[in-house]
Amino acid sequence: MKQVFRLLLLIELLQVFHLSAQERSELDLKKETNNYYNYDEDYLPASFHAAMRDSLRALLPDSTAAVFFTAPERKRSNDVYYEYHQDPNFYYLSGYREPNGMLIIYKERQNFGKDSTDEVLFVQPRDPSAEVWNGRRLGLEGAEAELKVDKVMLTEDFKYFDPAFEQLERVYFINPEAMEGLNTDGSKYLDGLYHHFTEKLGEPSTVAEKHLGKMMATLRQQKQEEEMKLLRKAITITCDAQNELMRQVDEDMKEYQTEAIIEYVFKKEGA
Image 1 (tube, helix red, strand yellow):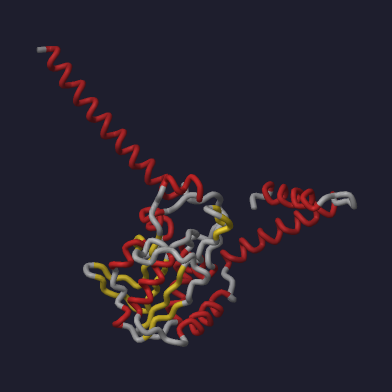
Image 2: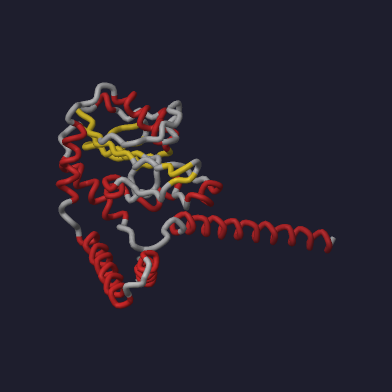
C-alpha cells in the first residue's frame, strides 16, 4: 500500500514539474519571439511607426486606402542574394525589415467579419531552415508583438482575403520594382502578392502612385526626434571613422586597408 501511495505521489510530482517546465518554456518562447529578432538597438520604436501611420491617415481623403509593398529581393547569382534593404516608405510606416510583405492603411476603420481595423500588415511566416541562411524572421506572432500593427496576417492568406477595395472611392499604391518573376498562383511571395492585389483592386487610378508619393514626401521631410537621435549618432560615427582614417593613412596604403580602418571604427562604435 505504501509503495502504491509513493508511486501516485511521484506521478503527481512529475506532472507538476512537467506543467511548470511547460510554463517556463512558453515564457521563454514569448521572450524569444519578442527579443531575438533585433540584432542591435538602433531601430525606431513601434510607437514611432504607429504615429507615422496615423499621420498618413490624416492626409488621406475620406473613403480611401494606401497600399505599400516591401522591396523585392535582388538575386546576385544562382541562389545567392544581395543583402536585403527594405523599401524606405515601408519601413517608415511599419518597422518591418523583411521581404514579401504588404501594408494596407485605411482612412476609416473597416469591418472584416468579427474584426474591424484601419490597418493590415501581411508578413512572411517563420522558417527556421531558411533563417539559418537568410537571417531571423518575425513571423506572425513576432510581428504582432514587435510591430504593434492593429491586424497582422500571413502573406499566403492574402489570396483569400477581401480587402474591401470595392467599398472605397480610391486606393493609393506604389508599384514594387524589379520583381523576380516567381509563381503568382499563391500570394506567399511578392510577385504573387502583387498579382492578387491587382486582381482585387480592379481598375486602378492613374494618379494613385503620384499622389501617394507626394504624401510620403510631405511626411518624411519632417524629421522626428527619434530619427534625429539616430541621424546624429550615424554622423558622429562617420566623422570618427574619417578622422581615424586621416590619422593613419599613408601613400603606400591599399584601398582595402583604408576600408578596414573605417570598418573597425564602425564596429567599435556599434554601427
